[in-house]
Length: 382
Image 1 (tube, rainbow, N blue to C red):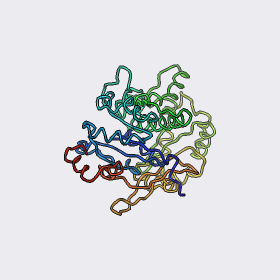
Image 2: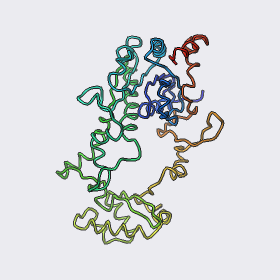
Image 3: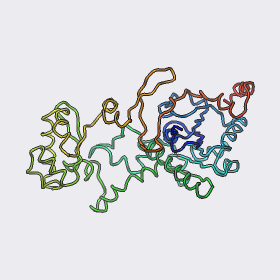
Image 4: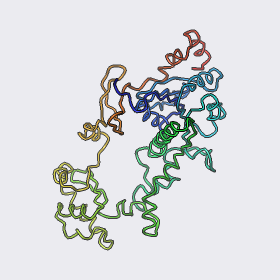
């Protein structure tokens, strides 16, 4: 039988929306889980239905504020393994679909909540978005140029890593624990907790130096020439990450600046060395530097745009940029599955569904007739 992924046979009911929760359930779906995403059709007007992370899933509409909607939800979770939600703390309790209520119906359920500041603590009721979680968690203070305001990254680090990825880790840990205990459990994922978890290197160097890390002025952020970014002759950029002495000395030899080979972390001459490398890298185009550095065993990389990434032969070879067929039959590019497994690989099996596309089919699987489904539509339950 063709492999369908490590999580084949696992059913996920996903109540979350936007990015953190759906990213988590995409990971689970990519690795074989049956994911049913549930959203209220009222949210369709927001225009934030991110279909790119709904591949391999089914999608239905459901109004949990109605008695009929709640009844459908509990029918779904009778045989489910995981419930995922991303509402503000307390919302699921008011709706009557919280962990304690669900556990009464299915004691083996694994229930994961993703929120900005966690289900407990003095900030649990605060609203926020990615930039706020990066801010309070100490990450944003370390991004950007010295003596300038912190720079907001162009990707959602807290949403994806602090929320989605940590939720996936927690769910997999809970599934493993359930294999031994037979019992499900509750998982509380805070995106700000996730960002604080990003600070081990910052804490290490703070203890090592006895001072707080300063934006763009520490060992792994622009202070030294060996770990920095440089502009090329054609206005593009590359990065150097020669942390170890042997890599730095190899770089100096390649660039013919051997006078600096033993001055890697010399604070008296660090600006001089940075200026030298800036001048050196501006002498050739990025493509020319690829020819010089590509096979030289130096820690370097071109700084690529999204368009560059989609064309890079590395990511095509690694199947991180793949083609799939849309529901209209058109070929389209999408991002691949980053976790590579030899025996139970993840895969992209179905394209993203349209909003609510599978509602009727799922209800029929639960035993609802066409007439009953029509009544639910009239009552705005679905």
